[in-house]
Length: 390
Picture 1 (tube, helix red, strand yellow):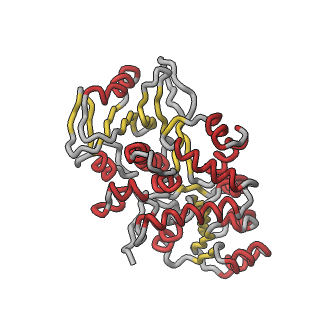
Picture 2: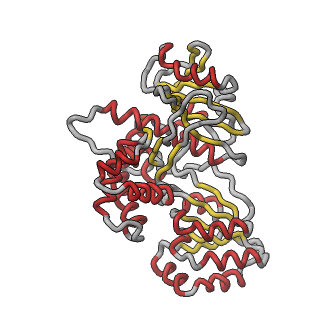
């Protein structure tokens, strides 16, 4: 058995939701963080049946629990009737901390709103490892091939595991819950959508290639985001002077999911797969960093109508960064042109260029940083780039 990799997640003392895709380490983290907690695992059929039939049975557990106890309700969306009971117990002032995990925001949306109003907080489990969590065991080549989902990265055969994960996850979370009527249409959509990973999203083109209506694609995209397995980045438009595009960029939540869904054949060059994979790896790290901050930060991208693009823009109380990602081993002046244009419009921003070389250097006043070094530095409790190398 692999040694446990400590995750970077600071839990609140109050009751809270912990949301994240299946298989991304929520239960394992809870086991180590709360070893004495009472756990109700709703993935177990007998537990699911018990609390579907009579969710008020939770009160029986609370009545005999010592003051200050922790009760974990794992995958609570499988027995949504428990949510009003928890809400009631919190409102009654019971000295019990409830921790509710889930992988489907769609099922939880209404009751999560009620419980957040009733003092239950929301935390998002980083669905993939931070490189800094793995430390010396982080392998950039492995991460680009199979991703950083904990149960995948630590598997004996991660390439086979990621294929099984995608198939099982889609079957259990989408098909079994009846979220789509035409499974074949949805499977074709997922494959076609993989070509949009790291790209500006064109819903009309996807609908045409998938042979479905645009409204169907919009619904499918909402399902992916509700199940926490995909996200979109908006265009950064604050104080914009140049004409900008309006469409968002799309990413699967982990590069391994993208690689497993992306069709490969004799005409597909490895570079065509690795470019989006590299950008997606950075995207999932930056998104996890943003979500871990107490203050609200925006993660966006910037692209003008004349096709000048900066891959990522982070804007918030802790700073303002523009980040460009390239596969090359070397950096030339032309490579940082987009960052120069962005800095002309936003002189307050800190431009960073990430590449596959091994030396940190400056090109025309812009910091060029080895990508692996950047990822190994990125930590939710650190300022991006400011403390690099310390």
